[in-house]
Amino acid sequence: MCVAQAQRLTHPANRAKHSLMTPAQHAEAARWISSRRIAGTSLADIPASLRPADAEEGYAVARLVREELTKAGRGALVGWKVGATTAAMQKLLNVPGPCAGAMLASSQLASPAKVDAKRYLKIGCECEVAVRLAKPLGKGTTRKDAEAAIAALYPAIEIVDNRCGDFAAMGPATLIADDFFHAGFVLGPEVRDWQRLDLASAVGVTRANGVEVQRGKGSDVLGHPFESLVWLANLLGSHGERIEPGQIVMTGSLPLPHWASAGQHIEISIDGLGSAQVTLL
Image (cartoon, rainbow, N blue to C red; front, side, top):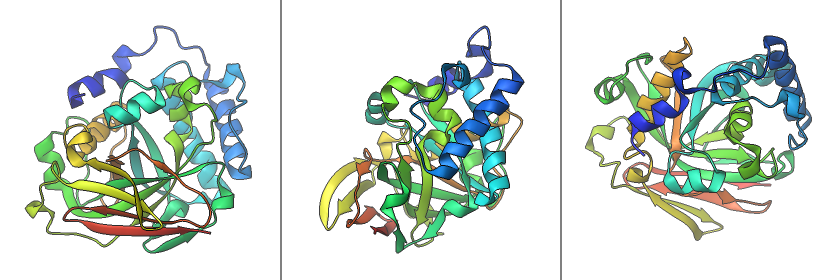
């Protein structure tokens, strides 16, 4: 799927004709979702009245979820994740295109990291290229703009949590409202001379206890991981937001996620970027 197609899927002009939720219901849905996340309990039984009707409603609820989680001590916004950026991931999740979620300060870790697997309902690890910005990006961003705004890249692991149970049946709007599975991210070493890399051809591998479990390449991510950055900037711009300098963007997993378990040591590696590691206790 090209970026132009992906943008049309979530553009306000292409949303459902009639919103099924009022602003009060948006707020109620955000309180319900954030309370479940804070308690570490499933969202699978979310009432039908609190399920967003479409992606735009999903993002409206997600913004309120972000505020609730920040008030609850999860920290300020430090970046964004883009999910479902490959055809394989879109098929797995039953979504038509990429989706975004917010990342808060409490979710950021440095490699090598350790996390308690019992804190998650169903933990997964994804192999990704992370980007840190030196300049803001918003509506109207082009690939050239995106590349000019990059300060550094990182090999990174996104920690995801299946809080929704049957995610394929849940639908993209509710997944978006829940920050699209985001639970944490682990940054490997910073790479500033990224211009030398051919990220489209780079292979990303996920290993569990030294055994390869997933493999993908950069071109699987919307053709190039930087296209994910372009998509996100324009999505946020349509909502009156932007990616700010210093923020981190997780551009999407090269391979499918590895659904992990306690006792596993997870390492991802990406050609030219290096590796990141997390141990699940």
